[in-house]
Length: 188
Image 1 (cartoon, rainbow, N blue to C red):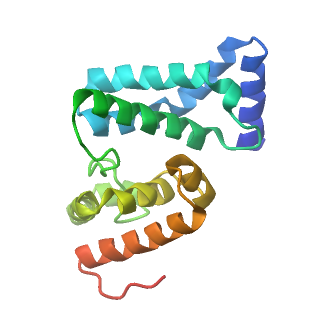
Image 2 (image 1 turned 60 degrees about the vertical axis):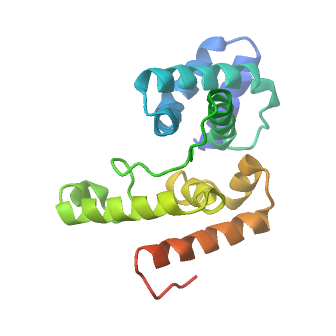
C-alpha cells in the first residue's frame, strides 16, 4: 500500500475518534524527530521532551493535515517550528540542521560497509564539518532534500519559500559544499 494512502487512512481514523491509530505515526517517525531535537539541544532529556511536544502539537493540529500529502514533511515542519520556539525561549542561536557526523551518511551510499572503515568515517566527518560551516539558508534545504528525502515542493512548504528558491539554494549549497571539501569539478 502507498505510504501516503496508508497515512491518510490513519489520520482519518484518528480524526474520527480512533486516537490509538496515532501511535503508528509516532512509532514510525519518533526517531527522526528525536534525532533533530538531539542535534538541536545536545541533551537527551530535552530532546525527549521536545519530541513529545512535537507529537502533541501534531495531534492537536491533525485536522490541518492535507490528505494526499506525505505526513512526515508536515510533521517535520512542526518539529522545526518547535525547535525554533525552544531556541528562541532559551535565547540560543544554533543551527537546527547541522549534520551529526555519527549518523550522517554523506560520504558513501553503502553506509554499512563505510562506517566500518576509518577512511569513510573521516570523510563523513569532513563533509559534516563543511556542512556545519554552510549558511543555514543552504544547509537547511540540502539536508531536507538529501538526508530526509523531501521533494522540492515539500521543502518549499516546510521552509515557507518558493520552489525556485529551494532549487537555487540546493544547487548553491552543493556547490559551496564541494568547494569546502576540495572537489573542483562541480556538475549540476
